[in-house]
Image: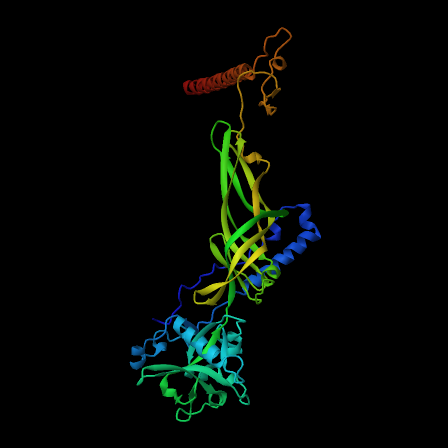
Length: 476
């Protein structure tokens, strides 16, 4: 089997979402100290979420051991994945049974000799444990084998050369096709003893030993990276608290029709739903203080050491209103933030990386708080007069009045002309502007015609006089 990640977890990208203060409506609570304190807490949460936990790519876990045929063919496990500087292969069921029989039944805890193994956390050396911890039943660790050369290259320099310890290992003899538990010296490891002088002594009778050419693998414990809370069931207890409001988006409703009718609109908005798990309740269940993975909304959220994380939410808000013909109105959609505090029961799974996890414990009456936008409501602004079309009526109608609707709603009619305001004492309407305009135009035209005729006659008489004087002069 290749040394690769088995069913790797893909955590959703968590990002911070803080609304711009300039875009928030001018609510009184926004100016209060409570609102500012809430913003500071939100910013602190965003700072914590950014520091995501990364698995060590140089450390690989393999759940199936290499076959003896592969060892005889000198198959290098690093050829499968060149990025794996430390390759751990978990113990099989038979190997674990053999280990318990050899170390706990034959040696037991009454013996003075203590044999140690290495503890690795995310591929880093975090300490050592003894076989008595396992035999006492104080813990059920995830045990694995790591090739001796990898221990020598990556962890030997971190050990104290003055210590006198013995480490548990297994040796595989290719000629005898046999695998036995053995132990090697701490001094051989830290001083990088040559293969000719290295000895891994058989664990039981110590009547034989193996060299480095016998495929030596040291025993390690893989410590969990996180706890995963799965199979969550929420209890009936819920406490809801509302906080400040925020501006989600702006839009405009248009009614191009000639009739007044209901106009609908919608906007899409996104936010980060904050998830805060009370870690004090979780760790009180005999658990170490590790980061948490929380199952929520069909995803597995990665929480920090404070139990805080988030998930991206995209949703839509629908709204509408009754609008006048050929009118336009601006809309602002406001969201209401709310905190939902719930209690839950869940199973706690240990997550070791590379998709490997196992059941650890159950918790009851855990506490979690969801901070999210509870509801969205539209705020309609006053229509701009430049967007409205003037409506004029050329027929005389009734006076301006308010009609009372059956459901109590008040509807105002458009203003119309009044008959009495444009009639004389006898009830006859005054003549309009149009006849006076026509009569005046005719008078002006007549005056201009007489002026033109007079000018033409005067010009004609002057021409006749000139011709008469010219004729008289010629005759003389």
